[in-house]
Length: 488
Image (cartoon, rainbow, N blue to C red; front, side):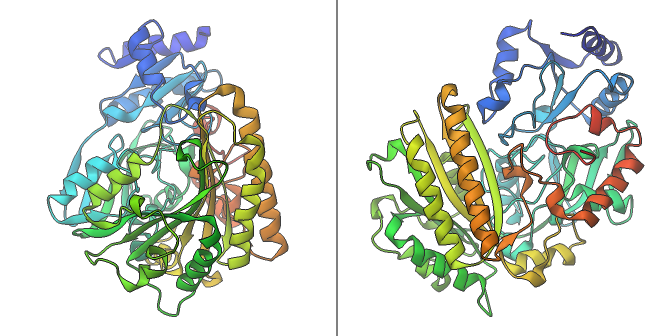
């Protein structure tokens, strides 16, 4: 621990004598907290101190305390720690601000106020009692701050069960309660600090620490949801069905689709891959016609079919059960236009690059497609805009996620190399076909991807202007290094 970091910890203890500060001397609690990230890449980092604030006032005091040390001491912001980007929600030798103790959910005037430390599962359970829903994460374990907890201070844009109908998650935030670099606690909405409100809809951890999100709600009952497993030879037809639906003159706004090619040693299917459709229809209607091409794909593993009428909580719990935790994990992504040949060839490329790493212990990886339908992109403008730079007039977009889990640190280089080679070839294939979309989704981005720059120059300038206004000394640029920074 550096002398300056020790001074920060001492100053925090003086300013907040009852604060929950955990250093490595408290071995059991420290290890439990630091090993609770989704990915071992985050747990590889060892902060000098983990600070667990109990309220927004403690976060404001933290910001005021660390400001004089901005040139020497770094900090990170953690929600649930589910984004695997190294250093995004943890920091080596500095202070990690862990928001898990910031809890509370309150329904008020057609919206729900959610403290930044809550999970989507807790929100869904609370709203279910009132027959309500909200545009949120697909997994109960995802944290509110940063969606699948990219560990930053705000939501980016992730998909949800309601993306086609309601738009991106950030577009449904009507107010951010945020601690800015001065230590002030502000509300950012259409009336107060509207420039900050827009910037936080995509700006990550560059502008402050969000302590509460106020979301728009809507009436919601049960839905038809689940998983369908099938075989690779059917994947091209599934791409055709996906593109047909996205480009339909009257596409359904009640559907959310995720299509994947996946490989896992636990499948017990030799060296082959298997395919997965994760399907959601947000009404309690079994086998709706719009899902028929994806539900009835043949041949399929019928014993693994989980489609049924279920609550939002149950659907999100199923998604959580499909994940893993506390292992090596990384994401990379690229966006392309809805084009059958581009998507099908991308899957072929991924399968080719997979071959050399299939023996990596515990490997589970996927080529996953998550569409952004035009109806979703249009909601951004209707709900007040964001800084993501996606234009609905350019048609539907498909996010191509490359995801890998594995168990042994010695395989890091090999697996990362596989993912990078596949991504580069997929990007080049899309570019050569004129189908590449210059947008990278932050939550799924690796450290060598330019997520912020992909928003476009105008939006980057808008974010930089907000940073200069609300953080004139660059506290969140210099001292909070994780994620993607505005002036690099």
